Image (cartoon, rainbow, N blue to C red; front, side, top):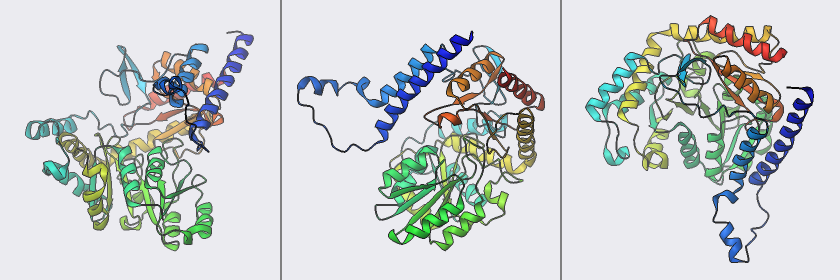
Length: 442
């Protein structure tokens, strides 16, 4: 590609990004007034999905791929178990695009427990647990997680995203305040919006800014929830948990920690950020986690005191009106949890592989942002176009990783995102970093 072609690509990309930003801003802005269409033809237009602003977002993304001649790196079809390697289109790839952190998804013992649960209970719980009743393996999983966190009880949900939405949405109301990290997961934001509570954010991992914010506004609200993550999935960094515990105590707030990416990753035995910092389970009011990553299943959970879990079990819409977690998935996650605790060498291997990737990337001059080098390591490209081009170039060389670009992150923070597994070999990691470094030099 010549210099002129490259310049035209950049200009086209910027024009489309401005268009996408305009549409995104329009979607996020609260309308000052609702315009009422006057003619039947206008009403007919509003009954078409392709007139929705959300479809405009999708269309602009497709247009960008077509104009810039960049094949979409998304929705690739994996033909077997995805771990450190995967099969796509009959070819084997080094895989950095999955959360199988300890290599337990597809593990023979984990799979065998799921198969045994199918033989005993079938493939589905069929209805909500209040209506269809309990299966022993569902409660065994919840009890095991309650013991892990050293709290009273635990409630399992069928979706990790829905766990945050339904729990936050049902526990808090218009008289309350929800304050969350600026990089908190979409599910936390959606739950806060559903609740009707006032929602504020504080700068990423800035406990001092949170302290100052609550000093100003705490007395204006009844209950306050502080929501943070144990390990942030975009940047791979973690909060100073002891600071947030101190703040929640001084300001009489609840503290919720989303451990989707930190369970199985942090702490010598993989017990998460609580073990990493050496804090008691009861120092945090709401422990949230997912089954789909370290625990090789699907769904989410909340662990905490008995009053909390009683409320959720009887009143949270995402539990009360949703099917119970499938017994086969509960069995798989229970076995994965047991394997994690029995084999801390998996956690140690993950830590070594993550640190190796981080060290090599920094030595090569790659921008890894604030990653702590545990399981999530970004390589920041600073350009959505570059992130997409690099992802496809890596794929051509047998390496599967995903680009992240606007509007998921700011344009200047566009990146490749590498998820490290304990089953990655040092050679696979060196190969990946070498190829990325070569692309950066180019």
